[in-house]
Length: 246
Image (cartoon, rainbow, N blue to C red):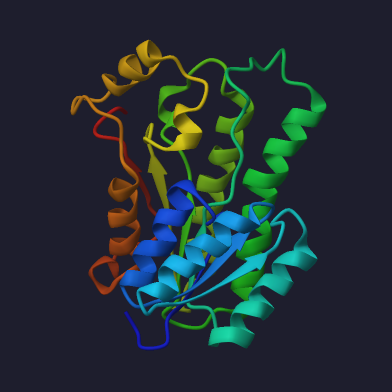
């Protein structure tokens, strides 16, 4: 890690995004905790970081809106200096299993605008601002490998993210900016567990040969590797963090 590394983590008020923000702060990064609506949890994340002598601010920005993304980068630069790490974590899930036939326009547009348009907006801004040595990590999903019924819109949005990850890595040729994606499998978070009966949770946990749900730490370790010097030769890749599920 470089001395002045500054990381933006989108959707960092809870879940995997929050865990990534906390891990990067422990590793010495100045962290911009982005949120769209959950101000209380975002500020709590910042408080936890600063209590441990880290540097962090919370910045509200809806990644679906390009002007707010610009303001997010502006706030990061004003507080800490140029952004060197971007973690695209912000995203929405489908409300349970929804077949393509039953997916209405509003739901489809909500998923695509946040999961795909949001990543496009931040990548575009990062490409205009980031300097040599910067790193970008996009969060995808191992649902793509399963092709599970009921996840059509969600899987489509993340397939787009993976495609942009590889294309953007090529577009940044010669600038020494690494672009990768991390695709977790089922992960034990409040968001994942909410509304699921225990029987279903246990069945999902057996899908991987390692026979357990992932933890946020499983994902944060991979993110830390990719943004660190040990991941310096990994670029344009999608790393599936799912215990061998797919």
